Image (cartoon, rainbow, N blue to C red; front, top):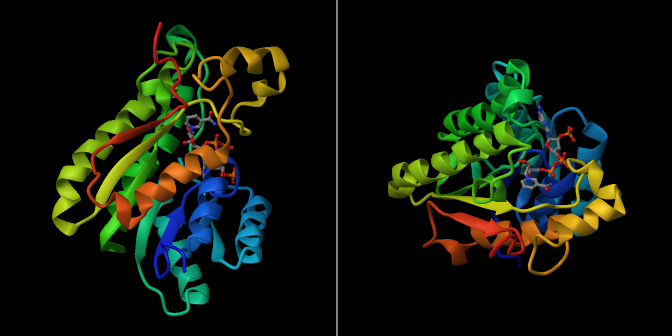
Length: 256
Ligand code: NAP
């Protein structure tokens, strides 16, 4: 039996990339997984298919984030799908706030619209997903925010994006204090560069080689590198860890 048997997990942005890796891993551990997507239903259904093929349980839920009322829409979709597929399960044990977008540009290149959009998806949405989800989240549960190594390493070419992840780290610390009495841990997992759709420029072999050198291991990350860390944080073994940002950058830029 997996370490998460009997638990229910919700992974935002579970349709692709890191979120898909997390959803698949939690599914392998025995959790019932709600695989959230924004617009790409087919990709979410594919994730569900992989989890089921592995003997796990999962269902897809859609909700576009970054719009007014997005968190309520997500939970309404979750409640409806859980009633249909949950075999009597109620509530949620593990909430992974993974869905996110990038925003390119040094400060003078960032438009007000770009700024508002990246904060709406990366910060406002997780904040209200947690707020609206508190009654559904069971005591002893887990909130895991997917942040980024850019809160430790300066990347001026993505200033606004980096700021959103700084906000997530602060939310993580603050909420951990607030929710401890309920036995809920709140942690952030901070990936370095991972080969997903968000980084299409990794297709350029020269650039890929250049950024691979950021890590002491000399490669970029894969979704599974992050998913394995999330699985640990989600497990009972991590019950004494809260309010932390777990660097999962493959030791990127440790020295000068
Ligand atoms: P990705 O491959 O582009 O996948 C993004 C996921 O988020 C998709 O499932 C997408 O859903 C969902 N999503 C995006 N915008 C959404 C919106 N407005 N509403 C609802 N869902 C939305 O990205 P990724 O690389 O896996 O990134 C996942 C997380 O890791 C993000 O928070 C990112 O900031 C963080 N991160 C990534 C890296 C990296 O190098 N890849 C490094 C550090 C941190 P659809 O499939 O429906 O579009």
